[in-house]
Image (cartoon, rainbow, N blue to C red; front, side, top):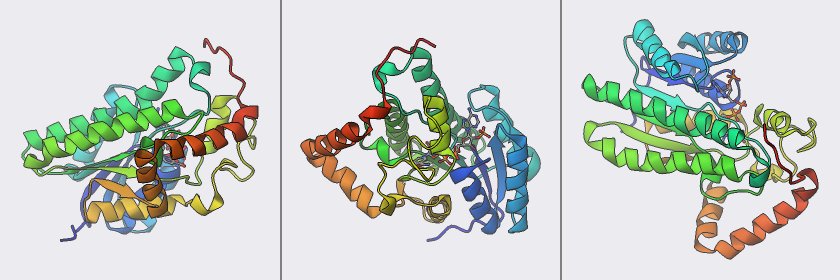
Amino acid sequence: MMKELAGTTIVITGASSGIGAATAVACGAAGMNVVLGGRRLDRLEQVSRRVEAVGGATAIVVGDVRDRSNVNELLDAAVDSFGGFDSIFANAGYSMERSFVSMSEDELRAMFETNFFASIGLAREAALRWIESDRVGHVILCSSCVSKFPLPFQGVYAATKGAQALVARAMRHELSPFGIQVSTVHPITTRTEFFDRSAERSGFQRGDLGRDGVPDHAPRLFVQSPERVANAVVQGLRSPRSEIWTSWIVRMASALFTLFPRLQDLVMHRQAAAERGLHRIRRHDG
Ligand SMILES: NC(=O)c1ccc[n+]([C@@H]2O[C@H](COP(=O)([O-])OP(=O)(O)OC[C@H]3O[C@@H](n4cnc5c(N)ncnc54)[C@H](OP(=O)(O)O)[C@@H]3O)[C@@H](O)[C@H]2O)c1
């Protein structure tokens, strides 16, 4: 049976742009209350206006997901503004395009801090609060298709998403007796600020990775809009499932890669060769 979403409350991290912002608007259109989290107040205010224009209500929490206090600030805002929360979408995340050996220890740990620890930390606190107050809810974590197969120069990013998806899958079965749902979302290449910010962080010029805001190596057939992911998330809220995918072809490819690792190696070898010129392997101590 489809769940009725109108009047329910969702907490979304990384709501200031891309997939998080599009999901906030889609949730607003479904009549939901949305707590918007992110570091850029001006962008959160813009998203808030868009959510309210389509019929949703909002609260804004400015903060960094790496701060331990951010989880409680987000959930407390939902309680103060809307009397509680019914779902969370732990979506804030980022990537760097760099070979593993060229990443410093600090860069490795920082990416795990945002993509892994912050997202599962929000999931844990939300679940504990639901259990302690005898309520049910839905945890959704923004993973990626690369949680299933890494790409060259994105191994650490893939590891953060793979680790997150593994914890989520176990959590799903640990929490099902309490009526709590856990899902992961596995977007493919999505046209957001993600790649520009990744290029900056990786030390590339804007445009080095791709001419139109997404990397050249991503076949244009497989480039999606954030609205497409947002609609899949809302569908996943209405009809909960363990994994929310936006491309059957990539989902099938990930299954084939698992069955036939040499096929995966062939694809990765070609991609690594195509991108090698961009990635000088060197020590980064910072
Ligand atoms: N784009 C893709 O191709 C793609 C594919 C698969 C999965 N994903 C995943 O989708 C999620 C959203 O990415 P996107 O594509 O929408 O990229 P985006 O447009 O760059 O959005 C990233 C969001 O995360 C927030 N964020 C990042 N670090 C944060 C921090 N430390 N504290 C608080 N907020 C933080 C940013 O907000 P502020 O800067 O305002 O803080 C921003 O709202 C990420 O988890 C990403 O890994 C993206």
